[in-house]
Length: 355
Ligand code: NAD
Ligand code: UD1
Image (tube, rainbow, N blue to C red; front, top):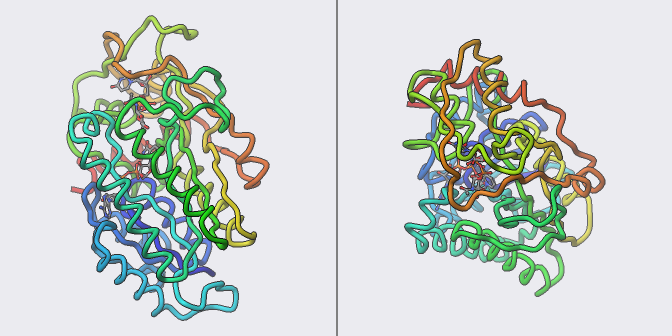
């Protein structure tokens, strides 16, 4: 059992990861300001984790940019009784840092907000970690760092060439983490570059609940299926791909959550280290394939229209997940059909998300 601080734990990926961590027997302190989530997600996580789980899930409403809120989270960690395996007598053993802003278009319109929350927020978190003697961190990075990749599948050694403020903010945090790790011994850090997380817990109780019109393909398709939107716009039918639509590496959010558990276990068991790992399946699917798979899952036709390309899109981004497989002994196991089945279980049972 470890005592973990989960920033942004009420969000899409955070909530699914909290469930996996509780089921693995860990004690969690979640710090979230609900800027893009609902407390209901964590209530349902506790419900899914079973009787008594709520005693192992400590929730603090607060902002990662506020030192006082971070201190409240570390104080809550110290109040949790340590187990024999717990490494850090001072409290929190490790942090998983999900909190941040992630909408590309919004980052172009409001860059300073992205630098503030993603970069300054991470800096405040690192300072609080150091002050509290906690130097083990799993960070939510993104495949968006690769911009327009030259090589597909993309290895971690591919150039970091972000093409929007969101991507630059993630690259800046990765840089900051490398500098901090080099500054003193004791840091154990994993930057996980996620490809395209989709789907939901198979119960349909927790899932992705975007504010407003979804920017991403999968929640958009789900909302068309449930009748909230009329049709999907397929951004480009003339890409150099098998069917002309864009190809991405979709990863089931439960596989991604299990990837965090694997990374955490490797960090906690090892010496000082810095890992930078792609988390993806290594398999690409086109927009039209995703639409067809979702139609099969929901048993109805998804109307779509092929429009012009979206600016900033690449034809194909697919992970080379080889390093994660060898270093974490982790790989994805869930198919596109399962992503659509579970995404539909969530969307059909919660047409308006957590509201
Ligand atoms: P999300 O928006 O659902 O979750 C982020 C959580 O952080 C939310 O609960 C939000 O309320 C919280 N938060 C935001 N600002 C905060 C602040 N200042 N203080 C405290 N909490 C704050 O997003 P997600 O999809 O779960 O993504 C989690 C992380 O993974 C993000 O850092 C994101 O950039 C990264 N990521 C996501 C994707 C994706 O496609 N979903 C891909 C790559 C990387
Ligand atoms: C987008 C972001 C990326 C971010 C990721 C997760 C852009 C250019 N990229 O990635 O930086 O890390 O989300 O938040 O915004 N598509 C449609 N119709 C839609 C939506 C998408 O055809 O309504 C297509 C896209 O062109 C793409 C695929 O579906 O080919 C996946 O798109 P999306 O879900 O937005 O993910 P990314 O573009 O990979």
